[in-house]
Length: 366
Image (cartoon, rainbow, N blue to C red):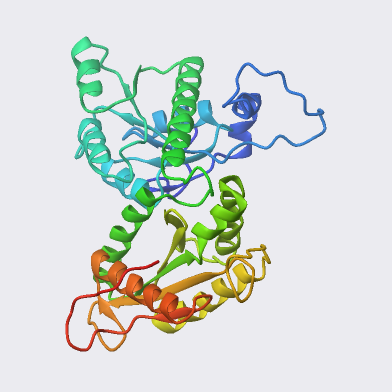
């Protein structure tokens, strides 16, 4: 048996070229993963672009890991672990697309590993395939009860392993697409309110743990009812799409999020951003939308579509111009700043100013 690469346990590894050569034909299988019945139309000389997929193989027997790695070579990026503990750490560092795990391992069994995977919100949707030398019905039933997506008996057959892994990858791709669609606003293509609420709560918790600032921009299209009344709702939809594209184009960091908050109102969530940085970005939002030069005769004096922006920043220890670090307080503060921007004449941004006499926020946005 060919020895495993050094550092295999709990780390990433790549099969050598000599080991992978007999299985090169499987790369063509991987290329058709999401459309297995299609006839390739790419010229033979052209490179085949394969989606970057991640597979995590777990078994306390290095020989089984090596065999599975050979069978799945070319299907995606392979990672290996010889224990459930190491596998869980790897999965939490970067969620795999499919996991193959031995049912019986010392320390943490495959059943325990699968249960912990399913209890983790970030890993719960990852399909887990059990690989076991126990072919009894009771073992298979126990695997599915623990949350397994499939069950393969040892010794594994290459054709069975490949087709079952491909099936789970296709199913996961479809499920991921549905989940993404459920979190995207259908009109503008940015995150929807549900996704924003989830992300806001998550970022508030992260900021509390790490002692970092968290900022929020509330963005409202000025006189949008007049725009719809004058130009019609189809034109209003196109207007919102252009505004969303312009605002999204200002985002540079993966953690920053633009969402449609409701109607003609958008939100921009800015983790690890203080009030100064958020205020600067708010000014860019105002300028970017005005630069679109979308005609709006009902919005004097500029006669183009503009936005007003409210800026608020929260911190674990509230200070001047900062609010307490909670989702509700941050939204209230940004809303108050947006109201101030509207009251001051629109087409501008305003930052949150704490009330002098009361902790409550007042006013309504029109």
